[in-house]
Image (tube, rainbow, N blue to C red):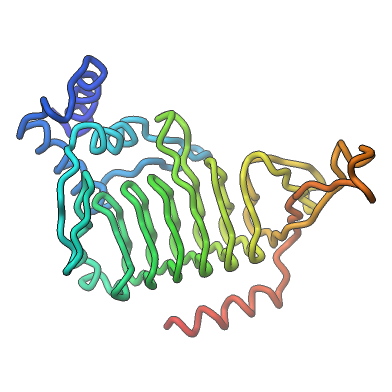
Length: 276
């Protein structure tokens, strides 16, 4: 059978009661092959089809099976003993592709893909199923969650959180498309899609629950930032602004999106030059 068929079969067995205690060497071999395919970039948790991002449900099933059908065991990382269902990812292939990761805190879990000419600064964490594209910077104190899809030539500013979305398996994970620059302290969660070549100001929260006021198309949208936008946080009047408990009114966060200005692009290009 194909890897997809093997994973789907194993998923059905898990729904019928298969546990980690029951898992055989053959079952674990399927999971090992699955992790290797993720790390090689042969399969992804989500892909763009017809202009829209869609989850590959069977891939997300495979990720969940690695938690459900493996025992937690003691593992070694240098002089540290830790306990987990998965070991950390081998990183020999990163050097071969021109990527680099700094020591003492850069953690890449098994099943994560890291492209060529990428940079991962410590401390940073890249979880299983994440896809980090070519030429992308994962800066200090960044987290890239399970199944998150990060494009090529992306800059994740320091202390940025990219959320993970594993369940339900049909849900699209967080996507940051090619050429995006996220300022320090940004958070992108709950399957939000950041359109290509956008530049997001520091400490901006992007989540489907917060409205995007797109001044380019003059509309309010949720769950995505269109391509080639400059986005930043502002506060708008809340529906409870007239409540007696709120002296001076109440406000809620929103995101304002405008065209990317030439000087903003130039500043981003100058910063890119520092990584050459």
